[in-house]
Image (cartoon, rainbow, N blue to C red; front, side):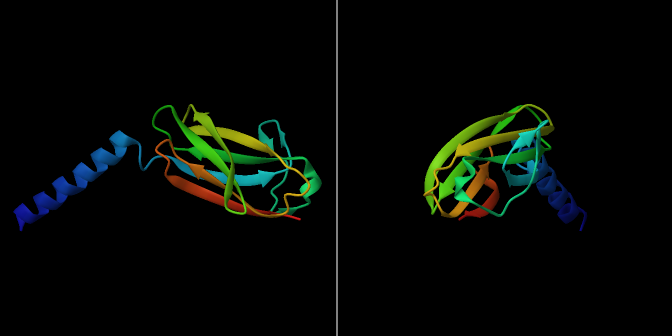
Length: 131
């Protein structure tokens, strides 16, 4: 039984060490909103549906848990077509960042922003609609 417990411990320790070394587990999106403006590094609102004549909208994200400097990407999709990809730095374990997208009035319909970690893995997705 002691050998089995030791083997389980070594496996768990190896997984923990790998995840910590590669920063896989630490990065988390604690807040993500689509907003009509950013003031004092904070979103002014959180929209799920809005008029397409807004002109410009923002994707605000609060990232926590980075063990070292890294980055995230905001990938903007309109009706499943990629419209923009913006890479943003994350320079501390508690970081606020955002990207923006100019919107044409005829771009009505379903939108989403996928938030990807530095390795391109999706860590959050936000959907919204423009009418």
